[in-house]
Amino acid sequence: MILDAFSIIIPAYNTGKPLKGILDSLKEQMVEFPQTRVIVVDDGGEEDLSWVKEYPNTILHRKRNGGAASARNKGLDIADKLGTEYIAFLDSDDEIYSNYLPTIYGDMRDGYAWVSYDWKCDGRKEWAEQTTDPLMINCAAWAYCFRADIINSARFPEHMVLAEDQAWLHMVLRDDVKHKHSPVIFYNYLWRGNNNSVVHRYLRGELKEVREENKAVMLKNIFYISNINSIGGIETMLWNMARKYGPTHDITVLYKTGDKAQIDRLRQFVRVKKYRKGEKIRCEKVFCNLDVSVLSEIEADEYYQIIHADYKVYRINFHPHPDVNHYLGVSENTCKTFHEVSGQDIELCYNPIVVEKPKKILHLLTASRMTWEKGRGRIEQLATQLDKAGIPFLWTIFTDDAGAIHHPSIVYVKPRLDITDYIADADYLVQLSDTEGWSYAIYEALCLGTPVIVTDFPSAHEMGIENGKNGFILPMDMQNVPIEDIYKGVKKFKYAPKEDPWGDILAEGASDYEAEMSRNVKMKVTKTYHDVELDRIVRAGEVLEVTLERAEQVEAAGFARIME
Image 1: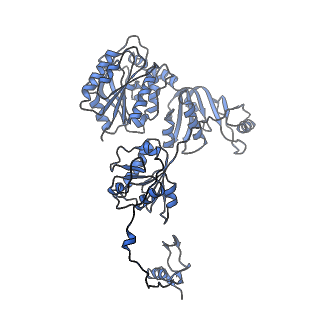
Image 2 (image 1 turned 135 degrees about the vertical axis):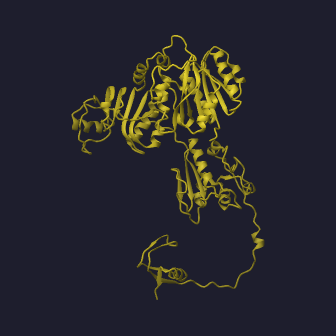
Image 3 (image 1 turned 60 degrees about the vertical axis):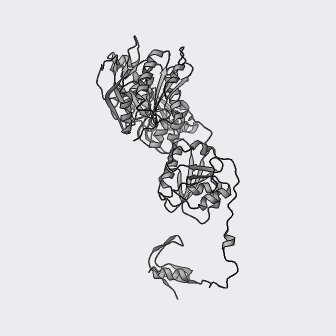
């Protein structure tokens, strides 16, 4: 595995001398690992850090003071724009050893999504308690390295005054990906006096208290749903709740089973945690739907049940849970019918909604065999790159090889004789072949004013395709594809087809040949078969009227008998 880009984010606030020590160490190690990028975020300190920019592959960004969480979030935003592949954090007033980059690069090349590491305090490894919980082994972001897609859009909670590292770690650490804890030590945490941070309390032997306080602090609101489906009203409510209130409120979604796509998108805004039987959980408020079976394992100050259904129409039997002390109905009717069935007081609480301006859906069209030389692999690569860029698209492919690539945005359509209307309506005609003698699909698209996306075969240039004017010519290896430019589109253009010489090549004059008129006959099907001309299953016993030539073909194949 080749690691293309690795970003190290360092928030800094009046820590010039220690920061220089870290940058000096990184500079030496980056000789072997030049693809490393260092992002220093000056969080509004009084010191002049302009000297930081003299270090290789180092970015300095200055912002208003907002705290370490805010500085790290700005670093994550910068790393996203750089297209980084892996991310790590350092504190500007600590120390790293010479094995820092070699260790991380080695683990990431082995395909780990995240790795946690051992560390020292003032040069000594001193654990207060041994535990198998990775969040208790390491309670600081600098003790990890992450693959960027694991972090996704998760950001450090800037409103928290304690344990913001752990709150963020709970959002990004997942056990359904390749991960490990490594005993390798490359970080030296420097004790900073009478500090009451989670790390310091950990080192003072207060692990149990840290664990209990951390859960109490982090888990403010829990939404429990037993099964997160791929589609549904509850799932839509959670999605809108996450987008609207996730950035400002601490929210955890607890589930038993769930659709991966739904879970991944929720993780952009809230913590998502899989339920484990027997695990005690503490929070301030817990919200559930019909399934209240896990409430006995959640210690909360307040218990809410959300009523989404009409209890009369669905004839739902009400069985109150002793812990539930609040009921919320999503409409006046659900409140009314629930109260009539249960006798319980219920509060009207409309579901949240976030309406964003929809992105334009990019409509791509391809008409081709789905073979490797015709670009099957490149089609898959381009679809992946569009997904990664967050660009919605619908790709219609006219082919007999339906299902060659399984992707939710690719639609296969059986070939038809004339697809002119489809080409004219598409945003791009896409042809990613190894080579093309002279592609009629591309030629027709250009004549219709539809831009094209093609690979760099010779005839593409001969056709007059120009990047950004009437399409895009992509490299064969599909690297450095201008995805954003493709999404923006090109201006309207006019295209003049090449003058062809066929008028001079073809023989002139009329022929004295008179074609015989084909006559129809009836044939009786003797064996069930799929008729390619009728495009359906023809069953034994059916009588069909077809041309004599067709009847003779089917009879010769043993599937029918011509009727006299």
